Image (cartoon, rainbow, N blue to C red; front, top):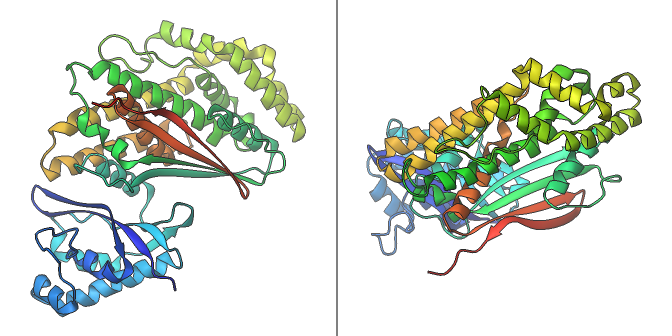
Length: 433
C-alpha cells in the first residue's frame, strides 16, 4: 500500500471558548499518529522539534497513555484503510467539542472513514447535514487557511435519456461549456475555490454599516442565480416529473424569472407578498420559458411521451405563468426558500467578525447549515436539494469577496466520460494595496 501524504484538517474545542484549528497542514504517513494525538509540531508550535517517538507521546498523553496510543493506532488504521493507494489527499477528522473532549480518542477510534476518490478527500462517515456544519465551521472558525486548502463541490449526472441531456446541457451552457453530450454516458462538474476566499465572512460588514447592503446584494444575486441554474437541472432528470404540472410549472416559471436586483436597505430577494414585483419578475422570463418549453417538448417526443408533451406547448407560456401566479403555492415555496437562505447567510456573515468564543462559532455554523438544508429540502415538496449547500456557500463567499474588493474565482472542471474541460467563473484579482 502506498504511503500517503495528508493535508490534515481537524477542528476541536479542547476547553470552553477555545477552538483549535488544523486546516490543511501537510504531513507524511509516518507523522499521522502524532497529528491524531494532537502532538504534531504544526499543532504545538511551542515545541521546536515536537515529540518524535511513542515514548515522547506517552509523556504528553499522560494517564493511561498506552491505552490512548492503542486507540490512536486504531484511528490511523481506519484512515489508511480508507485512503488506499491514493498518494496525496485531504483528511478530515470529526469535530470534537468540549463536552466530548475527554473521550476524544475513543470517539476517533470508533469513527469510520471513507474516501471520496474524485475529490481525493478522506472523510468521517457522516450525513450531509453534519458535513455542511463542518464546512460552515471552517469558513468562520479560523483566522487563516493555508494556500493548499480548497473548498469543493462535485456532482455527477447520468445521461441516459433525452431529458437528462437537455437539463445538463442547459446547466453546462450557463457556465460556458458548449461540448456536445449526445454520445456521453456521464457528465461530472467539480467546483473548487481557494480556502482563503471562503474566509471572507470574517471581513463581512455588520448590518447597518457602510458596505453592508452592496455586499449582500452581490451575495443575494449569486444565491438566486445558483438556485435557478441547479434546481431545475436536478429536478428534471427524466420524464416522470413532467406529468405533475402542479410542480413543474412553478419550477419552470421560477427558473426563468428575473433575479431580484436588491432594493431598499435590506431587501435582497423577492417578498412573496409583493404580488406586483413577483408578477413582473415572472413576466420578464416568458421568452426564455418559451425556449425551454420547446426543448422539453422535443425531448418528451423523443422518449415517446406524446400525451405529456402537449402540456408543454411553447405557445402556452403566458397561460402557464398566469396559472402559476394564480395558484401561488409552488412559486411561493421556491421564492420563500431563497429568501430564508439569504436571511441565514446574512445572519451568519454579518455576525462572524464579532464571534470570538468557540460556542458562538459552533452555534452559528449549526444554525446556517440547519436553516439552508431545511429550505433546500422544502423548496419543492417531496424533493431534497440540500446537496447544494457547499456550492451555495462557495458562490456566496465568492460574491462577497468580490464586493469587498478581494480575490475571486471558482474553478469549474467538466468531465464527460474520460474527457476533461476547465473554466473559471467570477474571477477577479484584487488591486494591490
